[in-house]
Image (cartoon, rainbow, N blue to C red; front, side, top):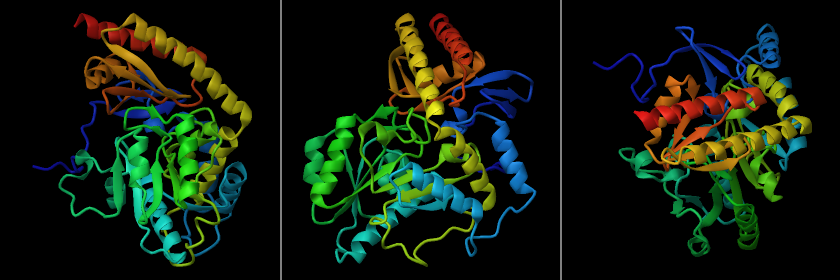
Amino acid sequence: MIPSILPTYNRAPLSFVKGEGSWLIEADGRRFLDLGAGIAVNALGHAHPDLVAALTEQAGKLWHTSNLYHIPAQQELADRLVAATFADTVFFTNSGTEACELAVKMARKFFHDAGQPERTDIIAFEGAFHGRSSAGIAAAGSEKMTRGFGPLLPGFKHLPWGDHDALHAAIDAHTAAILIEPVQGEGGIRPLPDQCLKGLRDLCDERGILLILDEVQCGMGRTGRLFAHEWAGIAPDIMMVAKGIGGGFPLGEVLATERAASGMGPGTHGSTYGGNPLACAVGCAVMAHVADPDFLAGVNRKAGLMRQRLEGLVAAHPGVFEEVRGLGLMLGLKCRVPNAEVVRAGHEALLVTVPAADNVIRLLPPLTITEAEIAEALSRLDAAATALETA
């Protein structure tokens, strides 16, 4: 008999009922140190007082009106994002998946309006994750994502990660855009080297195509810059954002240049809930923290400490861990034992981590994690690894 919740998840046997900063409290009272942050969502941790205050205040005023009317908090958040980024304009969604849908539409509409309707193809890469909508799974292209869901949305080319020759050969008269994550999350915490991101920008400019960045997981301060592409000193034409921007409240965006968004006039796209007063009140509160240079400096300082400790952990447990990967507080441990076993051992040590492809566990703590909590996290990871070695 099918359960009342559609069984599309293999859930861990844990039921968290409360959160405090970097901690999650299970229904039985156990306190878990959270290195998952809801898959890079809870950028400011759990129950951050500024987010609670922003949500509570707005909830007492107005929840929802739809986008048929002006929404002051949406305007404020859009202005903040435009001021802090490459973008000239913002469309608000509820999730990264919805942001992917618009990014694809925007790129294709741009070339349609430019008199090049044949330019519809989007180049994407092995290991990518862009959500689970029809466009998202077609962009990822893996059998795991697409099997049983055909016919797939056409117009996507999938290339091996890091194959420069294949990339140059794939661009033709039908290419509209290149879509890539500056740091792959689901794909196993794989950062794209700065020189490669610069090369992609140059290639798009040379061939007259658009660069779409998916910063749903790696954005909003996660890598120590507001957005990961800033490390390479480049800017995209279109960017997908979600997860951390809402700090746990469903919120996403597509950021774009005026040129890339030129085809998206009234009636070309919409969202009933996207950018509603509740979401944008929280988003403004998040931006007030993560766009602050002092906050980002703190992320970088803690990231350096955490990486140093993780390198020591790998050296201490070479039979369990192979290497440390990542950027900022978007880190991964490639495992020599099945990563699911490491995640479970973490649960036994009262620690939350997140599995990824390539036998990696993701370490995505709240950006507000303290140095003392980092030390405690490494102690618990050490205990988990020791338990696996002696099992």
